Image 1 (cartoon, rainbow, N blue to C red):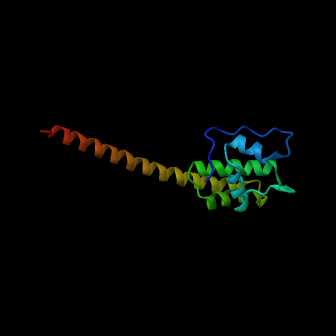
Image 2 (cartoon, rainbow, N blue to C red):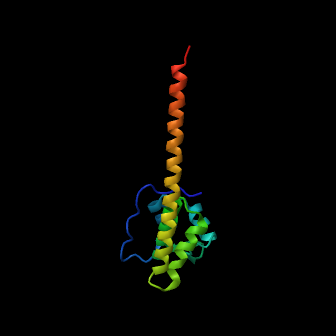
Length: 136
């Protein structure tokens, strides 16, 4: 759904307390539709002034988490669980522990997939060599 920025997002300006939808779309390389979708999913909660959405530094930080999580293959449910742990009031201890565990599991799964892909490539290369040596 969202186009994900390929580069790291710069830290927020320290004296900024609001962002427009246009600013966040430009900064993160996402569409307004994507931001509205994340709002509909309850992942971000911009303030409303009439029809205008006003995003807080918290919304910006949550958006950065969402996009990074999507980029590395987490589902929106997994992302929601990780970012919602921020609000527990435990100094983000549980959020860090859950995030580390989820990321470690994702690394292990990707390494297994990489191993399988490398094995498939090697098998195909052997097959190509075999077929080439038996040409008429």
